[in-house]
Length: 85
Ligand SMILES: [Zn+2]
Image 1 (cartoon, helix red, strand yellow):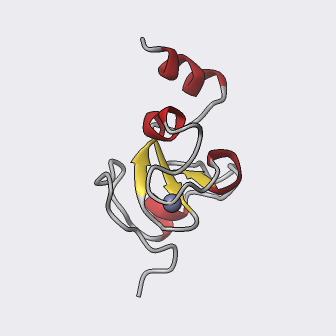
Image 2 (cartoon, rainbow, N blue to C red; image 1 turned 60 degrees about the horizontal axis):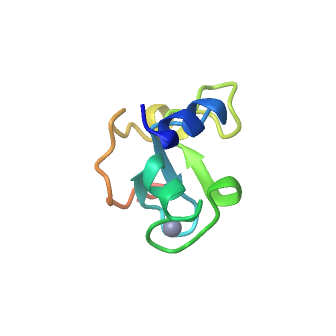
Image 3 (cartoon, rainbow, N blue to C red; image 1 turned 90 degrees about the vertical axis):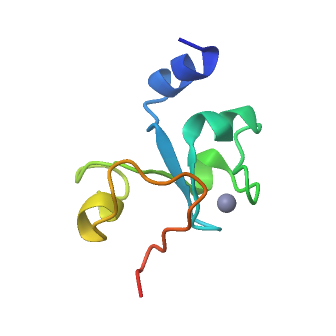
């Protein structure tokens, strides 16, 4: 287990994190490696990163996988709009 995996576990982060600014998904490890910023647009992991598989009782609900019907394992680097057209 890498030190990043340990951090993810301790902070109860998800394997994938979605960015509120650019709406792109990256592995959470890549956010952490990038000084806790979005690898694409440098948004803050803690302010603007949303866990991909949040539960219904979680902070944002499971909007991606349940409401929007996106795959449980997202394609990294792909844009997933919060409100699909
Ligand atoms: Zn971003």
